Image 1: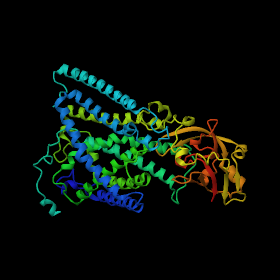
Image 2 (image 1 turned 60 degrees about the vertical axis):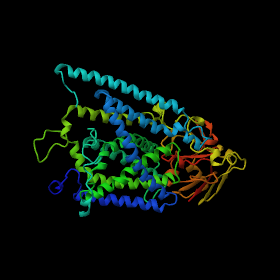
Image 3 (image 1 turned 45 degrees about the horizontal axis):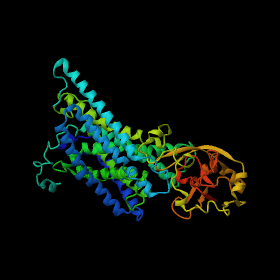
Image 4 (image 1 turned 120 degrees about the vertical axis):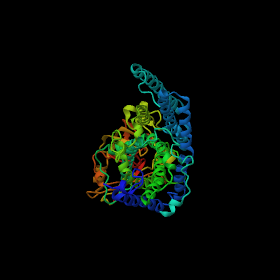
Amino acid sequence: MTSDSEVEPEPREAPGGAPFWIGAVVGIGIMAYGVKGLLDAAPSTQPNQVGVSLLGLDLLHDAIVAPIVCLVGVLLARLLPRRVRGPVRAGLFASAIVILVGWAALRGYGHDQVPDNPTVDPLNYGTAVLTVLAVVWAGVVIWAIAASWLGRRAERPEGRGARGR
Amino acid sequence: MARLTHLPDLSAHRPFREGTFSSPLHSERVAAILGIALGVSFSICFATGLYSHFAQHPPTWFELPARPAGLYRVTQGLHVATGIATIPILLAKLWVIYPKLFRWPPFTNVANVVERVSLLPLIAGGLFMLGSGLANINLWYPWKFSFPVTHYWVAWITMGALVVHVGAKRLITLRALRPSRPAEDPADPPFEAEAAAPGVLADRRGFLAGVFATSGLLTLVTVGQTFSPLAKLALLSPRRPDVGPQGFPVNRTARTAGVLESARSPDYRFVVDGKVARPLSLTVHELRAMDQHSAVLPISCVEGWSSSQHWTGVRMVDLLHMAGAAPGASVTVHSLQPHRSYRTSDVNEAQSHDRDTLLALRVGGEELDIDHGYPVRLIGPDRPGVMQTKWVTRVEVR
């Protein structure tokens, strides 16, 4: 398709070639359509607030969320034996996502918005979130036990087996 | 590009130094697998979102079909369920590619500038779409913009950025997905030499399994809001399809709509007017005395919940015949609501003439609850819930 590798110093990283430029022109055209639509629909779209939100989300992820996650990853790598690291990491990840998805209901934001509508947020979401978290961590325990057992069994015949770095 | 080469050399400093991020999970292969999943899920969300947009704001070339009756229920249920399931995949992908943020030098050529700059709207747009959608299904609006309009236009921006990204990453993704093999050909080295280590492979498989399991778990504890067999498992969804007056949810109550008095007033009349030979003005009793028909149809909310109910009332097409409307007429249905959005909704020819499009007086064998639109509500096949107008007082033939 392209001969990037002959002309570019970093063939794997650097995009280029006709398919890239076709995609770029089409994609930038679609983006421009979106930006125009957003601006034309002002003030109901509040373009300034949307722009700040977009930049803010990028920054929130890159400057706060990702570094914290990396830090947690480093701690897990230092504190936990290799075989349980995977299950615990998945458990922490799933727990964070479950709390994120349940957050609005947990805090009753929807219910506060329409207090006369009992069909919004009808459950006790504290109990609901704890139930889901219990399922997550039950899965983590089963996974960790299975991984340890399988790992030990794999090591026995040869004496080394799948020992990681 | 010459000027770019005069950037200060930060490549010796953290986090720009190679090897800063030592986890083998920051891998091209993991990124490629998550990337493909995201490409598919964003496309599903975009297509189903467009269908919902066209259903509510039909362009001249689009007519909302009346059949299959549950189409909108499926497309909107899929839209919300896919969006929720995408949250862990997007966040995992962002973490996997995080080290690339610190690549130095940041750009190597013009194509590279285009590709990397378009990541800003792609990542921000992806987070915005999932975040605003999640807040919306929870009726949480910590912002000033109108959700549907803004969600729609930012979707175009995000999808445009995705097209650029796919164009830029198509080769790298295909290469990353090829099975690992030994470095025999120096001109075409294996994509990731370290992938051969079995511990690393297991680690990556475990990571991906954790991400997709989280995605599956979220689906399991939310999809019951539209897929009733799983209703009891819907622990994290803000609605339960079986909770509400007469056993299903309400989006806007009669109190919020400001119709508590007008809907129960003895002066209430149901009017059919506009382009008709014989305008009608009927009391609730007169409506009840007309031929009654029943249909099982879902209320399918844009926010992703839905509930199938047994409705009984007068067929729209019978009313149109009675009023002497021209064949092929489309109508606008008006609510008693004095103001606010969704006070009226349009019913095109295909829908107004469908045998199941009813001006419903009863649900589940009972008179409609006032929060479900007493005395009369519109219910028709394949319509967004917000267009199943409640507290109907006028059918205007156009």
